[in-house]
Image (cartoon, rainbow, N blue to C red; front, side, top):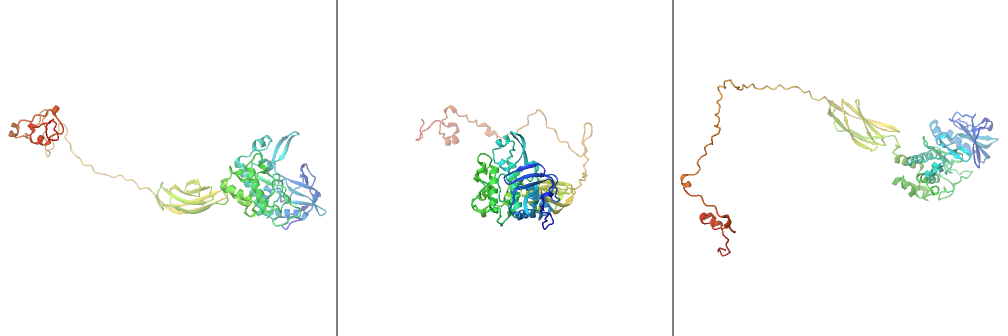
Length: 471
């Protein structure tokens, strides 16, 4: 048994596998068997044996694939095992690679499909995401919601980013049968047939092939850029299921679920310019943001309070800035106020009961960041003391009591007697008769104002013409 530089075994002989279990699958190049008796200290769960029909022509490339996993720390190794059926041992016999040992694909990646011969467990390959949802249901396959489709694309991109960045490999043969999906947990995608991957920049002895309808426009060797092209095809076809989806290359078909930035990325991914294609990590981050998920631990920016002195029970306003925060929590003493942090900034009113600093904490699924501002001094409300006001004591008269000697009573006016009015006209004025009122029936216009003012008794209110004559 050969070991890698990390001390973990890389190879195993056929006789060390134990008795082979049930045949789980068969293809043109290999047959897969259950390994009920084999365990590996660095692998969790059940194992299977993929036995090549004609052996493998480049056993050193298989050892390199196994060694790449062994070089990871335990956390990243566990992550790799969750997103791929990665080879964990090369099965060698007389110096030839006759197969590989790999983790068994978990049950949630299978569907119970009704066929003519009965119910069969069938891999839930990603090609089922491209067909019309109603037809998928008739076939016994799930029909993911729009949000689930975005999450599947997110995990497909995230898994490919892990392979590109952590293992520095080109997956190469990305096609609708080389990945499976689940809806109940993350990661939602698992990559299969990983024994064909190769380090980036290395030409494989065994030529990596393109599946029909997954051929990059530039042709030639498969590279990180061709992986990115095929990732774009997967995103497009997963988000636009239906007739002809499996051969679609038009980015506009995904306009219903992608925003403007996503459509721009998709256009570049499917272009003939390999250098302009978004990376798998770019896709993962964009899809996480589109789903409202954090892409990094939160970070607080400027934080301040609007005053440093306040009456007990009265609020202060906390101004805050936060990047990638899902929630902002503001605490003073026993009072806690939580607000939505996705806006990126805000002004939050917080009532205070005691003096001290105010804690501001930004939170998301990836961590938290906190800061203290203040302190703020809280004053007790002013005490309310009763005010004694002297009231003068007055003695009021009551019926039957004597009037105060120092107050003179005012005489009451007589009741029922007309008051005497002063005589405003002299005797001479009263001898002149009052003028007779004019006969309004004889009034004409225009009036002779001069006559009215000088000769009241002889005023003629008849009509006159412009010569002054009567009419």
